[in-house]
Length: 226
Image (tube, rainbow, N blue to C red; front, side, top):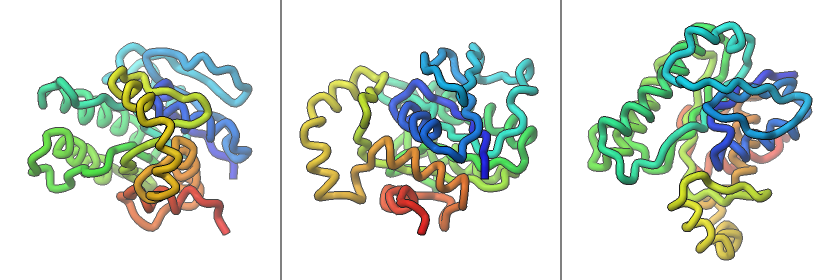
């Protein structure tokens, strides 16, 4: 069934991978990205909205309607951030978008890229995990048709994709030669950007058994439907 997909964070590492898989999927009729910068990609099924204030969508609601799925890949690393600032971006920015979309697209499937180790209790030791857990819990309460929280761990970027975060780029440059080997040994711990994109598309098309998906669940969901 043809789908219209809204994609946040398309210039980030995960978002780039998700965008690639969307444009390769014949079931995706339209991919519309929204962010502070354009992706630079050109494709007949790609539309882009460059929007400076990702906390406020009041002026651009009409082009945010008519979507079957939202893949929310936007986020920041917690390194060097205090809890208030991290909360403002991770929770505040995400919910600003999600609240608007739940009102405009009640039949939407919303998929949020969280992270392995996220704390659903919101009371754990690690600041980032508490904030991610609070964000997940809030999203799961919204009146979407369905909502899924993706919790990948290590991610191997494929097809020339790079992270925008300098620290992550250094990490991937150092570990790049061994990540394929690690993925063979630990297939449920190391996912690729391609697997995450395929899993999102499959969740939007046919749903998933769980609302919170850890790395093994994402890997299984990425497999072709039989």
